[in-house]
Amino acid sequence: MIDAGIHENDLLVIDRSLTASNNDLVVCTLNGDFTLKRIVFKDTHISLVPANRDFPIMNIDTSQDFEVWGVVKHVIHSV
Image (tube, one colour):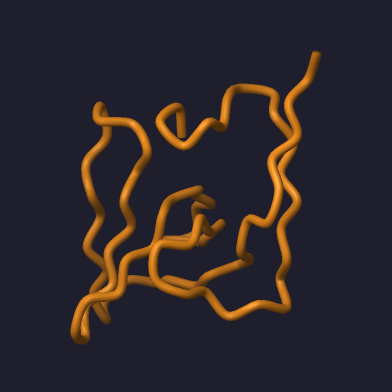
């Protein structure tokens, strides 16, 4: 998540009570694995967009085990 200003060893404050909105940073489970991505809703499609150009966009379909686990509200950097 380099392009989103999130670096290795940063701490994230995640609110699990929120419903994800378009372009939110979210923690998701996808086929049993956790991932941190920007969520994009377009028409009836959901995409998970990485903030690092080295990783591909993930398009979610109904055959996948997918859940938004929480919405990132704050990032804490170490000094």
